[in-house]
Structure formats: C-alpha cells, structure tokens
Length: 53
Image (cartoon, rainbow, N blue to C red; front, top):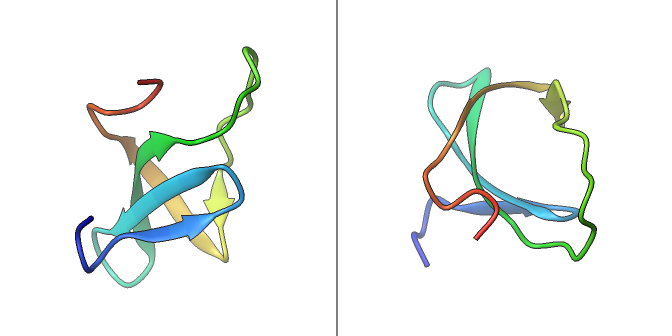
C-alpha cells in the first residue's frame, strides 16, 4: 500500500492537494454506493483506476 494512502469507511484515498482527494478503491461489499462529495472535509475530485475492483 502507498504510504500516502488513507482509509475512510469503505474507501481508500490519497491527497491530491491539501483540500482535494482521489478515491483509489472501494473496499465495501455493497453493489450500490454513493460517492461522497467530501471525506473529512476534503473535496473528492477524482476516482482512481482501481475503483470497484
């Protein structure tokens, strides 16, 4: 795992800037999910290539 990666609920993500993040992976089991607009106050601006795998 990348040392800069973080986890929040069912998502793994990393910082792009101090206020923006990229979701790297969905770790949950649900077939239907909602992409959060923010995680811990940081705006989600990108979904990485591992999303949903």
